[in-house]
Figure 1 (tube, rainbow, N blue to C red):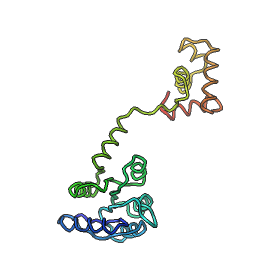
Figure 2: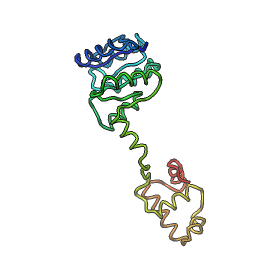
Figure 3: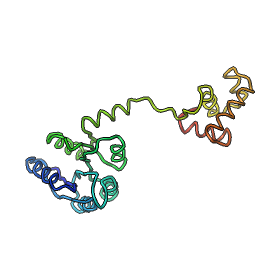
Length: 208
């Protein structure tokens, strides 16, 4: 039996979910909450397997309530059910600790499947949300130093390995004066005070 608590400030939504769980013998509705603080309190006192969380909650919004549940009752999984369909909101919800994210247009079967999945420790997202997540993951990583020219980036990468300017000049087949100028330009564009700080910054972003 999967124990569920529904947190939504709209009575119509709570009524609809209550009716849904009455039809599912493998699930039990153990509580309802109309505010974020009620949701946190219910998660702590009832210890449901899953909290279905709206994000636009009064008193304490769904992001903060999700984060508090993660601290006070970490074994309780939060499944977001919201009208909001944008990447920023999705990212905030996941960072807050949500294990799933569905839109309120989800079918009864999608809700049942999502509740079952997060109760089992899985992460699950609605079809449109999952498609966007996959797109973000498959996109090439952003350039951490877009202000640098390709040659300045080469110099920065070699700085990160600990090479001297003379060593960089020899490796790249450039004059020492050119490398000195490139190095100074890198320092200026990255707002660093010298080669050590530049090298550390480069290593933090995977260069060297």
